[in-house]
Each structure stands twice: as C-alpha cells, then as structure tokens.
Length: 226
Picture 1 (cartoon, rainbow, N blue to C red):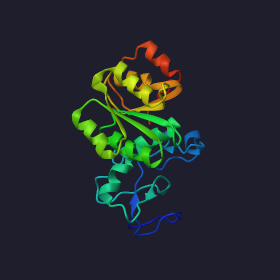
Picture 2: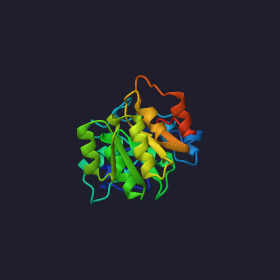
Picture 3: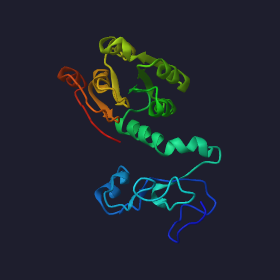
C-alpha cells in the first residue's frame, strides 16, 4: 500500500494488502448491513476492480479499505493472490454449508482450482472431508492437497453414494459443495448428502440434469452461487 485515505484506520502506508473486488459498496443496503457480511452482493457500488472499473492489472489502483485485508508477512504475494478470488469463493461456500468441526463435507469437483483450496480449508477447520473428482490428475491433486477420502466419480453415482454412506454410518455427508461444471455433478452432490442436509452450488454449468429422486434424498436443496 502506497497511500491511505484520511478515513482509513485499519491500514497504514507500507502494509501488504489483499484488495477486495467491490469499489465503494454503499454501506446502507441490507447486504451491506446484514449480519453475515455479504457486502459483495451490494448493487450500489462504483463497480468491480479490474472488471468494470480500472484496477487489478494496473501498476496501482484504488481500493476500498472496507473490503481489503492484511496479508501476513509469512504469506508471499504469489501464495496470497489466488486467495483473493478462488480462496474467498470456496471458503465462503464452506461457511454457507454450515458444516462444523467433526462433521462431514463432500467436495464434488475437488481436484481443481477451487476444490484443492477447499480441501485445505476444510481440514484446517477439523471437518471430515470427502473429495470427489472424475479425472486422474484431479484425484491426484486431491491427495496432494491432503484429502483423507478421495472418490472417483467415474464409478457412477450409485457406487460413490455407497462409498460415502459407508464412511458416514449410512447417512451421507452433512453438506456437499459442488464446484464442478459437469451437468451431472449437482445430482451427485445431492445424492451423497443426508436427509435435511445442504447442497451448495458454486459452479455454473450450461445445463443441469437432476432426477427428482436424487434431489429428494438431500431433502434440503440449497442453491447458492457464492
């Protein structure tokens, strides 16, 4: 950070900072004032840095201190950069899933950019994590990221559901997060989730095919684009 505004109190010149996307959220709408810190949904901003207003790829850009955070000295800028987008996305999905320490969470499409970060976040929070992917390289990345249970979706929904139920005493995971764009991934995420569980949909596939009986098995089907 090379300069700070007169009203900024949480940062000082010279701080290492991760810049938020939103440029000046209004601070007055329900999303800005809500109890769950969801100001990223504010519709009354000047735009998004590097998306609709200048910044991000420029040498310097203006950022709103309210949507920024400090980068610890032990974390390099290279390591921190993915956390400002992919990291925030998958971390919020885990928070929205409401899975607590010791409970079970499935990540469908776990062997990718979002998923491998999600594995590490879930394990750091003490969550029992089931990583599901359908590619050799993805399955290997799940293992490298530290997943204790790695399942191959190519074995089919019935087999994957059985494997998940074997791990969870026959009930299924408390929640699933789908980060795969494959048309059948959402159905699999629902199918491995126990009754009254939560499924968080992060990926945006072109089309989704979810048989009714597989949605019903999840009971509480929450679609949440985070």
